[in-house]
Length: 315
Ligand SMILES: [Zn+2]
Image 1 (tube, helix red, strand yellow):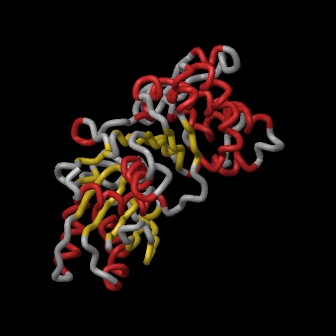
Image 2 (cartoon, rainbow, N blue to C red):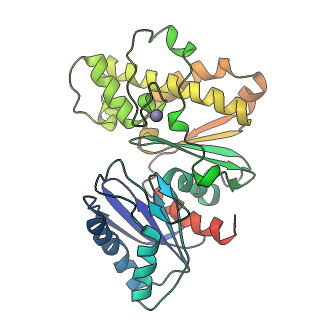
């Protein structure tokens, strides 16, 4: 049994998960991110009720970065401004030791965990090589090569949200749009178009008024609202630019698109295929499958549980 912890900007989701990916207990607490000590309190609330039910063999934690994997720390968080070098791995170990108990604790970024979750419990079970794109508030990515997570130097590889997207796609329909400044400081990263935040920003631009709608709401009104459809078309073109690069670079047969925005498949897929397919070598066009996940609110917890499997194997 694994203890899985999925750190988000507004909640900590935790679960007890068996080795087949079945969630046997589940718990959500709001995240207090104004300081390290407040966050430590949320963490305690998130896991103590589960530890009373069952003591796990290992614990996996998925968190947005940047992370210091060597020291088991969340260096900072875009959504929890008070968090600085939070030693999450040692904090969980401390809670274990208070219960007179010891188990390995693993940490990785949430997009890497999402990729592992798909590898062990999801749509990537049958695949050797695939990429997972998580379209959430930001845009993250995880890469599985030969059934192993690709980490990159110090585990920070495959930050595909910050790839600038291919401009030929934009020349015909979106020649005049302004570029938005990404959280990383650059202009024109794919995340600025194809994340929930990007969709909110460009919807505001196309409608010419400050936008209070979420990406989910924009998807819901897209049937009646041409500006909403235009915003998703732009997001899809940006994704096409990223995927053209990824597929030609890595020859990936499977791309899994997940996260909250994946539910907007109806508005993303047609424009994505319209731009991407003609731009791929025929051999890639025929072999690469793109799938969108739906209703996967437990994917973060499953991804954190999958981290226990892969790290226990010494991968
Ligand atoms: Zn960026």
